Image (tube, rainbow over all chains, first blue to last red; front, side, top):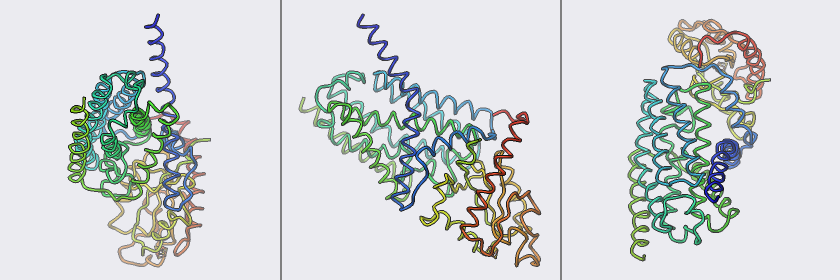
Length: 291
Length: 149
Ligand code: SF4
């Protein structure tokens, strides 16, 4: 009896994520654009603008450079969705992180398959970015395991004490790599935020029309998943505080985005590894020793 | 009703302008005019663009470039010629290297005259272009797709 109830709950959460994450992600992106505009003392587009953009892209004729391109993009979207379902149905945190990496690899393959120099540079930079943020993501999972003795999201989320109290430095490190994952300045190396910059649009240069729409939708799914990670740190305070904390984390990212110019990939890798090695490892060592 | 009207992405190309019109185009992005209010984004990528905004006239060297940019833009698309140079060649018309207005090379949908064209006129031109875009989309929908996405 207990098992079927659990299963039903998992299905509900997973399905809920599949349906609601693009809505929430799109609204978040619209909110992001308005806030960014206000920070630059502009008015900004309507909050539904990201939806208009995606629907428009679906109406356009796509130009396909290579038949594999769309296959890889669909795989990318499916794996991002799968990752989110794993996470939101209370699955294994480590598995989530690995599935997210697989999704990233599909994106890189899609960009490589087009043979365009801009896409290739974008794909290479994406790989470097993955190299930069992956250690810190793993440290987040390890830290949560050390605190709660479980890799299962459903155990972590019901843990009695707020995890951010035990892992404050890990949380700061996670916010740092979140900038990379959200594709925000100063770490928007692989797909420059504005199209008229040195690598055009980098990894998404060659994707047009419906293919680009897939890329955008996958990005919305991914953003909601990442905010889910922030939620875990604050889960014990109750859902309201945790959701507000996630939104505040996102606003901080928007602020960072507007306040910095893009940095080089060398700096990105060096800085994120330094952060992982200091904030992450030290925090974990302290937790492990105090146990 | 399509969504093209609500999110036109612009590709801006400078033919051989004196830079006057380009500054006016970029002025549209500033807080004073803020074209992002209408969902307009200045993208530097022809494959993401819906509106091809050209300033300056066509010269012998940029003919292939203009053609290639135009061909790389996915359908439906419109071309807006900004400034009197892009419309007819303007004061550079008689130059040995100038071929004339943009319509000598690719079909132009909207002409925005002026030297330099004011930001208000440019925004107005783009908005008129959106009407054309809508019509082209309707025409495209009735035609069977050749390149299945
Ligand atoms: S129309 Fe006037 S301002 Fe515009 S490019 Fe020509 S000469 Fe310059």
